[in-house]
Length: 292
Length: 273
Image (tube, rainbow over all chains, first blue to last red; front, side):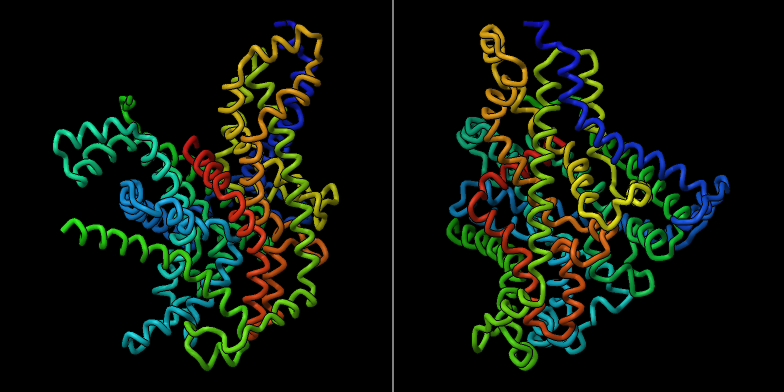
């Protein structure tokens, strides 16, 4: 038995396809990104080794830090919006009729491709006959902004479809966690005379804190590498006002053919993501696991 | 008092539901309008006449190519991902060897990698082996990048399989290949279908890889294809709406039929991460 189940040939044969794929297409490229960052390279011609120049330039590059700031702002917004999702899930999970249906409706945007979402919201934000401005004019706002064309509002305008896209995802996770809380705990609290609000905030919320922490990490990390919607909706514009780290990197490499510098930014993106993940995990780590 | 409270709660939930669903409904509505309807009437009005010809127009305009590309690329990548992930998970969870923890660790690290940090080398690798503007480059990358999440979802299920099954099978002289393909794999169908759905949502909607690796129209998938399609119909909102509806319809239909699997898949892919 043990001999059969530890046959080295079989193990190699079964694990190799998957291992080779992630090795060659995920891990090797990561190392190469760091390496390309040391080169002056247009992507096609010969590479020229220039040491840390790209990395030093990146650190002194105002545009990079501006895009990083936008990514961090998105992270803050996404994390703050978790509070709303949490409240909605608490209501949904309080044995309300139609909870399943509502939760499924909330999830629909999550299923759509970013290009479809982007095109849809470009239409929603359209200044002349988009849904948003028609609504605003109807309720008496005189000069609603042309959302995606104004540098001062474009970033916040873009955050709305992003929050819209992920709302159902987080609500679903919280709802699933809340449903896992044993009924007996809630019953016991009721017998002791706890109000629904007390049950929600004093009992249910602390019990799903572990899941909440996971979602904070997901929201922060997801925001730092966010790309699709912004790239399609504004391309980072107008004039860099909605540029994020990933879109800046992409533009450098695939539009300006500055592959060396783009790689350096890509490597910094990786390092920043890893550091922030580490910090958020540390900050939200619990000393004791809740048992129930 | 209690009544009013419930009313308020439902009101909040309903407002959120409308916010979540209304843009999608609105998209469907304007896909059935013509420009006159769209530009001279309120965006909330119903179409004066349902113009299904918008759909005919964009389908004949060539969206079909993108559609079939999306279908076969999504399907092949799903099959490869789920097969390789199942094989790896089987070996990691059921067989005895020294490096299983290490290999599992590698797959889990793969979950944290931002694709933008590896896309430049991927591009130059594919350029070297002539796979740029070749749909197989996307099939391979989808497979590789979906392996970690797929293995993560499969893992819990494989751990719970009783070891008596293997023991009995081996006693009866069953080979490992037979054990895996004939006994274990069929037992994992419930969790496999969850991973299929998750992979389907990812592959169908993927944008960056196709946008970077594919340049000819004949190989583009829907997500990227509709981008330039929309360019053609710049001012014809009805046609744009129809294009977008066609591109999201398969996923919405899958959701309609398998919504519980989707819900299960999304929550299990997230919480364990």
